[in-house]
Length: 271
Ligand SMILES: Nc1ncnc2c1ncn2[C@@H]1O[C@H](COP(=O)(O)OP(=O)(O)O)[C@@H](O)[C@H]1O
Ligand SMILES: [Mg+2]
Image 1 (cartoon, rainbow, N blue to C red):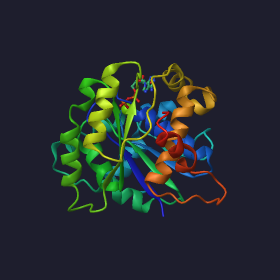
Image 2 (spheres, rainbow, N blue to C red):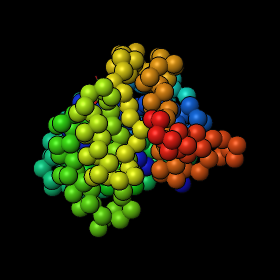
Image 3 (cartoon, protein in one colour):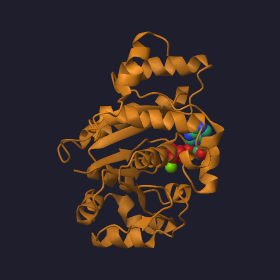
Image 4 (tube, helix red, strand yellow):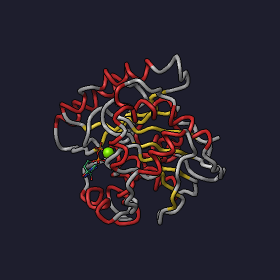
């Protein structure tokens, strides 16, 4: 059963694309088959895995409820539905006239034995985000640990709740604190607020890290450009945490889970 995960936030620049791309790569690294769907007309996720595309094929698939166009990538385990500027031309879709289940219908028809389908959404609650929310069960919300980072979270939670009549299983699985600066007091204040707002759902943090900022320019996720870096460590750890959070069964009985390794340390108060 494929798990469809949407990476969503109303705000831009918070780390949605960085999170979608790097989680996808980390899951690929652990042997999972992953399909990354770039739903942002800016095509940042596509560029971040070395693919430049005009988005015409995706636009055509959406217009005709056809199977999604899939290209291979150089990232182990990872295939991509590329996006590009052609999607901005679909102005009629932003009027609210058309339905929100177009992507879900395309995805249903798309063949492939994916363990994870990860959708990178544009900022805002426009047509492409709404369609992503209809197509997914699991929502991940990257959040900047700055004062304005909390802005819009309530609005987004309400929007996700409003999907429940049509998509009853949709659930915010995780709030992922991104671009974190642990030495700033505001970081800890925001972390406290997030834990209060979303108990049990705040993931380990992703620190601000130059390797993460540099990787897209090389068309690769951080685990391939800076294998040993804070960025690679943090995304690998969040992947492990999400496996448990989403209930992804470990194939190998001997594999260590997030709780095996980190819970005793957290409980000891050393983190
Ligand atoms: N943890 C991080 N450390 C350093 N730079 C980051 C980090 N997360 C994201 N960035 C950079 O911040 C910018 C915005 O991130 P991005 O993932 O594109 O946000 P969004 O998709 O929400 O607009 C990009 O230039 C990206 O490389
Ligand atoms: Mg983005």
